[in-house]
Length: 549
Image (cartoon, rainbow, N blue to C red; front, side, top):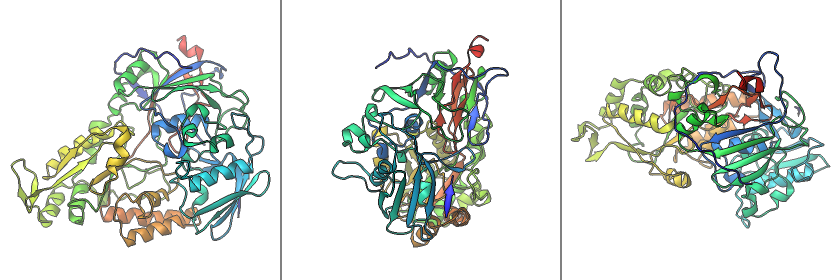
């Protein structure tokens, strides 16, 4: 079966809240926002400043992957395939592929005429070296394997100048989709791939094929991107060919949301990531809110069956029926852009079911379930108690997004009404993944991308991320069926079984659909956001006519 398919001075930032109007226009291929005025045409040149909530101090590809880092990496490093804004899986550095019926052997056709930013050629040997490092890692160098690759990965070999053969030890129906799954499966220059962990972590030594190169970086503070003048292989979802319009993009870390918003409003910067939902309805003329949906999970809570109290399905169901999602949307997301979750995935993902009736807010039902589970006594604070133990749960707000703490605070208030205590405990970026991985931590947020439904296999299977900790043989079997689906139709059908299982057994508590958000000055035109919620500055340009208004 064949498929064609320098360091720079930091800005003085003033604290002020920004208001804004809503704009999230979906087109064919890429969500394009702030389109040009009538009669205006793209202008070559200019520099912009982009405020990101978080930058990091090490960029080894497989070890990165947060929403913050991905928005920068996406400008420098490209993938063999990508998901456009409509969720279509499209070739880019690859031009097509073949696969056998067992889904154990694949051949990739590589795009000719592409070079890395250090001048090395993109060819079959370069791609094979990338895939082998992604699929195997390198323990001697301390380089991890990619979590997106199946553990059955065997090897990739060049079988011509521009053809790569890939073998798996066991069938994996969705392997090709993993080659476009996220920024952490990008294709890097051989010099980068062959380097040690220290150099692979040094952003200034990362050589990709993207339209921008790293001019300078200050770890955890700033990244300056410069247009690559010889770039000539854009994706099919772009509006022009040749080099990017913008000459330079300066990305700076500003953690405080009000500082980011105030800097945009005052004209000190051109675009910011993560506009706080409470600020969305108040953006004034001259600014745009970019808030497209994307192919990923809803914001929700994964329940660890190994934690205290959660081995009882009645308790798990009480927790999900004890959440008033309409209240969360009305209180925390007043712009109208956000909606309640229908299932485990955003509604745009093919095969997403509408299971809202199965986890709807029902305070009486939640109380009844907890009574039946034996939590009938109350302590002096009004929380339920059984055998002298308070019905209490711990959660760490996500460090990767800016909205989770406000959501969790409302959930804590709602659960208190049914006698359940939610303890919200903060941690920092460097410790978050470690503390949340413990089996005793009962709740863990999910708000990740899912270009393919098989991401649920990666999140939940006992041999993978295993976020439920003890998912059980029945769920593992459903997830195996999902991962081995040989067609979109098979994977969609299998994904529905998985959705129903985790909802009916209250392994997962869906709350609301999740969005990536940006605020941008209207003079910044041609921004694009793809199907995985990744912004692109390739088509972006500055409209001088808008500046003079």
